[in-house]
Length: 295
Image (cartoon, rainbow, N blue to C red; front, side, top):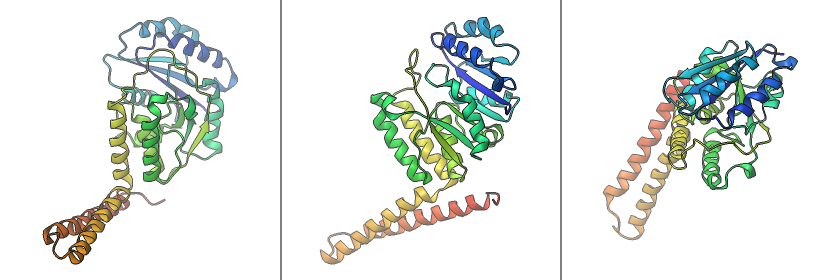
């Protein structure tokens, strides 16, 4: 079996963590996990999470490592800490809340090479996700699909396998918050890398979700646009520039038909503004392409 490192970021997961670690203990008895390591990164938990980890650490053997942040730094920061500390290039990540099928790890790790992919993502069934989040998630997913030109069944699943080298190369773009998974998905897709989405079973989480219902979706939206600007700026600048130009032409036609109903200044502002935005997008796209290594 290919050596890999499993990273589990945790924050106030004293309820779910014992069951998750027990599932890992049973899994690590199997042959496929003999060359694997587990890194649990505690992100400054304020409950009994550190004590739970310490108490069960001996049961998981020498392959188990525990890293603790002295203060809460964020989900993405915890993953970055684990990725930097990993001894293997193949990285698997999973949440500690008991929702993801850890038993599928062997299949996911093997699929990374079999599919010649940059990342394997566990795609959750939409019907099993919280109903209150589905509209926002659907909007963000549709926007991400438009900006990347690829189908994305699950944008921010917390169960995936990728390479340490790819993640560390993208560290300057990857945020410290929950948007880590969204950003790495967008970044790899806009680079033209192969990302495989594999359907998984998704269990009900143990404990409370850490995602803020308003703040985090807004951050996801901003990061989707920011990541696209970094890799494919014309997807953003192009439609905006063309829209402004079309409005300018529409005002020009109305001015001609309605005899000076609209001033010349407004028409010129929209036309020139649209051309400038489009030119800016073309320039950004040129700079972006010149900075990319040839494939």
